[in-house]
Image (cartoon, rainbow, N blue to C red; front, side, top):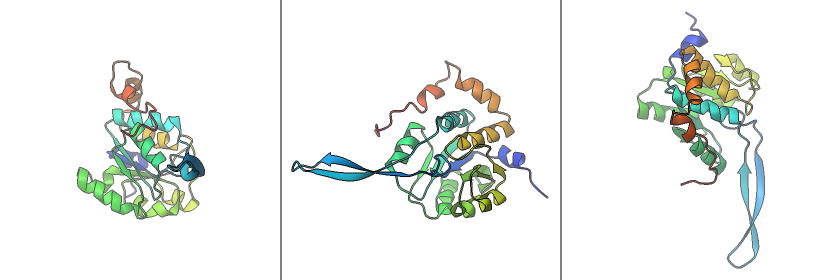
Length: 205
């Protein structure tokens, strides 16, 4: 029996995202940054910069209002990702993960959810092992053809341009919560929106 994407989305409790190409457009800026060394000379260090969509940030607020947990699993290690994850108060942050299922299995063990209750949003073939096992596999609009072919849902927007928000809204709509969450997100009396994505950026404390 074929299971509809809407039915799959109704069961989701956790949404996990790749970063590069999903929460960003895939561009990685590697920048040499000069700094003064103790002896007075000028050295340089490499900083990795990424651009994130504010629409996705607002989507994370909607997810939290809907009772969903969110997280990222990515192969690269970047302080930029750590900062963004802290701004968004993500529940799970796994960097340096060459094999994504290892992190997914750890999340299952920690939370007690089943794989059927997890959604994963990806864009490239490296994510297929996870997408084949979770309950709801999402590909962004500009994902590789092989990834789209195995996804249960393809977002209307590309990675870095609201694809993460698309996935969240689809799941919340399937669960009958989207309108309620949007209303709560603009309610001055609700404490969740003001605490999310306030842009402290470099404040890692």
